[in-house]
Length: 183
Image (cartoon, rainbow, N blue to C red):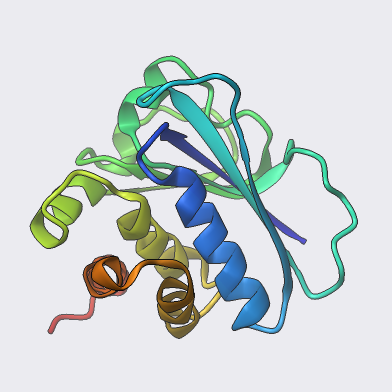
C-alpha cells in the first residue's frame, strides 16, 4: 500500500489534491484508493492535512495515515511550525513547494527531499498562488504512482468546467518541468 500525507493551509486545496489523486488511482488506474482530510475547526489559512492511500487490493484501514511513503508540503512556511517528516518511512520522499534547493533543508532522516517552486508556476498558469494542482503534477512526475492522463481525467470528473483547463495546464507544466520536457 502507498500512503501519502498532504500538508497545506485551509482553503488552498490540499484535500482537493489528495482527492484528485485518489480518484485518478481508483477510477482511472485500476487501483483501490482512499482520500480524506484531517481538520477540526480551523479557519482559512490554518494548517490542514489530507491523506491518500493507494493499493492494488481493497483497503480496509480507515484510520489516519501515521506512517507514509510520501509527504507533500504545499506551503513551505509550515516547516517552521510542523514536523512534516514525522511518520515518513525510511526511504520515503518529501516534496516541498519551495524556491530553495533541497539541500537547504537540513532533514536528518533517511529520505529523499525534492523541492519545486509551485507558487511561481501557479501564479504563471493559474494567476493565483494556489498550488494544489501544481504540486499534484510534481508529485505524479516524481513518484509515478499514477499516470498524468489519469490525473487529467480526474480533473475532468471532479472540477467545474471553468476550472478544468487551467488546472490541467498547471498539472502538465509541473509534470513537464520535473520530467525535463519542454514545449
